[in-house]
Image 1 (cartoon, one colour):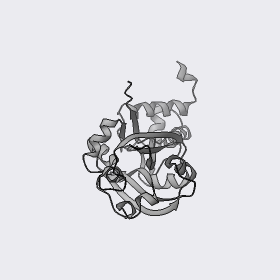
Image 2 (image 1 turned 90 degrees about the horizontal axis):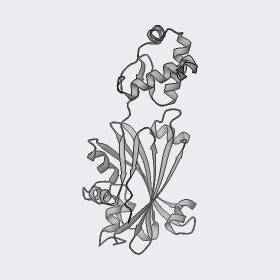
Image 3 (image 1 turned 60 degrees about the horizontal axis):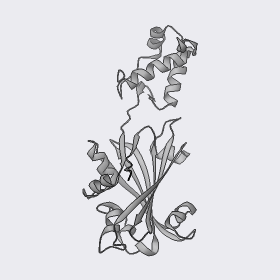
Image 4 (image 1 turned 180 degrees about the vertical axis):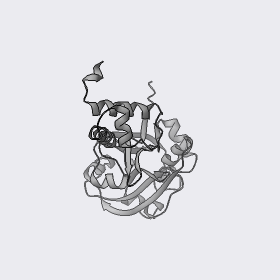
Amino acid sequence: MPDQDLPPYRRIADDLRAAIAKGKLAPGEKLKSENELKDLYGTTRVTVRKALSLLKANGLLVSEQGRGVFVRAQPRVRLQTTGANFRARRSTGVSNYTAEASAQGLRAKQQILSVDKVPAPAEIAERLGLPTDTAVIVRRRAFSIDDEPMQLADGYCPYELFTGTPVEDLRRIKGGVSALIEDPAGPVGQRIIRFVEDLEIRMPTPSEVSALRIPPGVPLARVLRSAQVEDGRVVEVLDSRVPCDRHLFQYVIDLP
């Protein structure tokens, strides 16, 4: 068989990975000890340790000091991108991410980390159609599910357009910034007609590893979502960073 050409530690890792994928080893379940695994696979503790290290680097296992090695719990959120889905989520009056999680039987918690007036970074300014360093308001938030950090989301809005509105307040906005944009009495008063999303997959920075508790070897997805209104302006850019082991992206594209 082809896998017989693999080093012993890789065969053990592949066997354990398959058991996790099939649910034979459940999230949160404690693995057998290194000695037990050594006897089970007829090998050495060094080989078993290399196999476990590989799976830890892949984000499938975690070690707990004094307790052992466990299958890593991985709550997943399916992020659906459709116009109808956005409208349905908006009608709940909560943020899109929280509504997405709730629709899947999960309870998301949102924390507003900060609200600041800052010079627009070049890539944000470009999407907003503003000169670089033009003042914007940035709302930095973090989302978690069952105490597992799931997403960092920074929302950028033009300062001149949104100054004096709830966007500047360090508190939640009912329905999110999208609701304020579409409010006839709000600073924009127009319907959002288009989202443009730029998706980047990369390795996380040290600060993202710390904030999102990302295991070694797990990549991060960064999504820049630009919200365009009826007169063609982009009035918000949302910069979201999510660990790839906790999310499934689904894009539904209707063709004319």
